[in-house]
Image 1 (cartoon, rainbow, N blue to C red):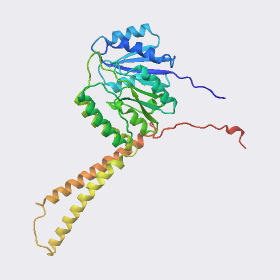
Image 2 (cartoon, rainbow, N blue to C red; image 1 turned 90 degrees about the horizontal axis):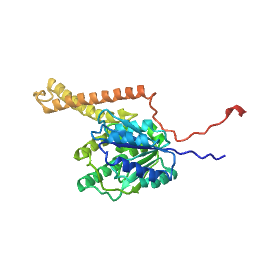
Image 3 (cartoon, one colour; image 1 turned 180 degrees about the vertical axis):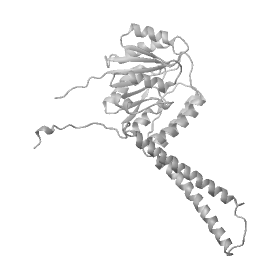
Image 4 (cartoon, helix red, strand yellow; image 1 turned 180 degrees about the horizontal axis):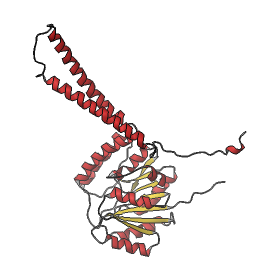
Length: 328
């Protein structure tokens, strides 16, 4: 007997000083989503706004039964806002949406079609991006770097419009500014990720909260994500290689100098001072640094071993169940 899974959507909207756009955004969300999935909720997360955003959210929540709000005591960042919203989400599908009206809720139908075709994460792609050049070109460089370092090649990792299954949200953890790497983190867990070209609109209210610092922070976060996705369960493989090379080079240098000193003592080579040679200082430093890096890798392995019981190192897509009571 075929049973149709009831779909419920949770729309999570991080908000920071967007009071002028929230009412219009909710109207567009209702118009774009209700014809497709009637059962949906909207969760606004006020990330420490200093304008009247919270008052607007409270008004919308009182006027609409499917609208709720979360208010932070101060600004904690977009990743924290998304995490708080997702933790309260009751839907089996989660739609991320920025509050500045640049993301078009009408694109939800196209995202949902890709989910229905078997994907777990659908990332928006602002194919025709209406942003100044100093945001567009650094973003292209960033997306290229993410693609070649993680193996997941998307045109627009930074797009705030994302649709994914609740299973994805339950298996990945975002903090700092790792929200832009949700597709990468999901891909590393084995989820199927794709992208869809979406309509991008010019900003009508407020101003962008991001500048060149966002690009620099993104590069640092990329290093973090690469380490987490490749070596989170085997950190010694990342640190151990570097430490082993340093320790080996330092040890060989010290072995050479020690052999040379012995040859001097027995008169096979002319006596000279070894203590003043730069090779001695470099060899000692290399050996010590290599030993420290190896020790750090071993400590990381112990930490992973101790915490692995609380965090699965695998991701289950589906299971089959057998009734063993009637087996012979």
